[in-house]
Amino acid sequence: RKANRLLQELPGELPQLIRANAEAMPYADATFDAVISVFLFHELPGPARQNVINEMSRVVKPGGVVVICDSVQLLDSPELKETMEAFMQTFHEPYYRDYIHDDLGVRLQQAGCAVLRRETHYVSTYTLARKG
Image (cartoon, rainbow, N blue to C red):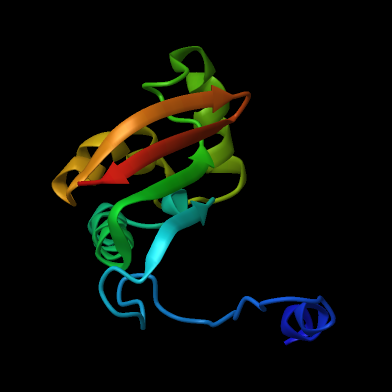
């Protein structure tokens, strides 16, 4: 509510913030030019990760982009394995162990998106994909 109040003070077209299940977004197919997720996927079990990626692909227009920013994974930075294992224990992250072994690129391909680029910056990984 506060974010919506603050956004109303800005000139121009206003974004609308909603609260919804990312596995069943309340938008029509091919609604957006881009869809972005920030630090969600490490919080989800594997099947939910795929469901959310499928939904992201569904609501983005053909040729549109899907961007995922999340925690670094073992395929990006195997040298941080001890740090990742300590993180999941210290912060009681129930799905983190599975997440660090998951391949989001394969999941994006299964949803009809081609990975364009994957970059790691310290403990974050950014994956950019385009819907076919």
